[in-house]
Amino acid sequence: MTAIRQEDLIESVADALQYISYFHPRDYIDSLALAYQREESPAARDAIAQILTNSRMSAEGHRPVCQDTGIVVAFVRVGMNVRWEGATMSVTDMVNAGVRRAYLHPDNKLRASILSDPAGTRTNTKDNTPAVIHFDLIPGDTVEVDVAAKGGGSENKSKFTMLNPSDSIVDWIVDVVPTMGAGWCPPGMLGIGIGGSAEKAMVLAKEALMEPIDMAELKRRGPSNRLEELRIEIHDKINALGIGAQGLGGLTTVLDVKIKDYPTHAASLPVAVIPNCAATRHVHFVLDGSGPAQLEAPKLEDYPDVHWTASPKARRVDLASVTREDVVNWRPGDTLLLNGKLLTGRDAAHKRIRDLIDSGKPLPEGVDFSGRFIYYVGPVDPVRDEVVGPAGPTTATRMDKFTEMMLARTGLLGMIGKAERGPVAIEAIRKHKAVYLMAVGGAAYLVSKAIKASRVVAFEDLGMEAIYEFEVEDMPVTVAVDSKGVSVHETGPAQWRGKIGTIPVVVA
Image (cartoon, rainbow, N blue to C red; front, side, top):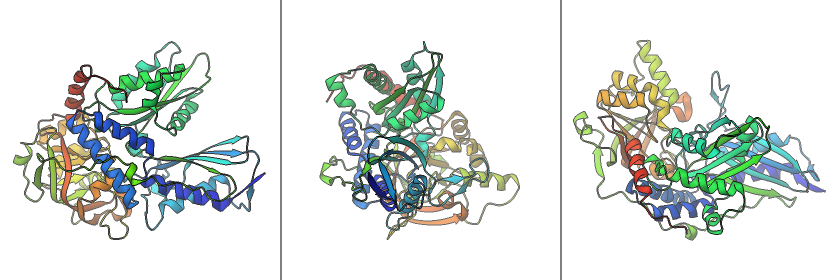
């Protein structure tokens, strides 16, 4: 009978979460590098270059690949011959103690994103606990753990349906993926759960995302069962949609499709789809009684030789002097380098701004949006000599319902976020001759290097959702919706969807 120490599990969970915050899985990097080599869309290729460059920078600096350091999900399989030595906590409490230790680590503090009372006060727990934990008792004398940190942008795009047994799973998935938009930060993975009951299918989909990327290998050897046939079919049909990296249009939307299934009722066909984003973060470890798990760091020489630099065609923009007349001349797909001061704000800040305006009260001192840009971001706290931690964009569609108010009543000139905007926001942008700019999701550490100064100007109690003022230098963005309401997230995929059928497919 193996004796497992409480402290070994706590330390292993903490080490694993620190590890995955700055080390991408090797299979993901290799697969993304292959996609970069194949990509023919300039916009998508630039986005992938930023993600790969960011990944190397994060590995070197031991800082998060994404500002959204995720909700922790753990699959814990406890051998039935295991004995817990000197344990004073439940296994759930041990895992949460590891989460707490990881997210409060002084050398690499991770962003606390978990809120208690989700239907009420939505109060930040400040240490990212509790985790979502799935347990299984298995034969053996070890404890196996798969731990992941799942970003909200990709988690929010999860889909579930109860199909009729005669319906096509492939057709439903190919139809539903475009409705996810680009807020899940493709290129990434899709986890698919088929069968069981409603909740079982969702867990299967999440568990599938813990598996390594092997689509290229699968295609080389060929499928050996129906699920592998489904994986290839779904993978190819989704990529044929032309959505591409960050939804800009291109050859690669998914790097792999993973499927787990389970027996189900004769009348049912539950199907769940959960995407994993460009910040794919998960690791497996085993405790065998010899001490904490040892995770081997990747070698920097194993990273692809990709180093993003701004395009010579990029236009530098002075945020202190830019006018609405300047903005009118920007076109979807234009690359800009922003210089000067901008304000930040996410969901909670927008709600407070709306409440103040509706009640006739002034905005807080220092919060003047007239002729300025707002960046949708919730940064990681700085460490050491940083002015701010990783600070990539959050999903812009969550702010769509506030866009008309912000443009009509604050004098806001433009917005910066990730992914597409919905019809309501696009109409407001067109009406007010404003603009929406897109930063690359999954390049948070790279983006943070463009931020030269940072200070909180309002709503400090909201933590990472407070309003900051950033001073930026050559911050890279793409014009995603121009002043006429033309969206690159509509034109880009449409263009590449038409091209893909004419491009020869090469299997590595």
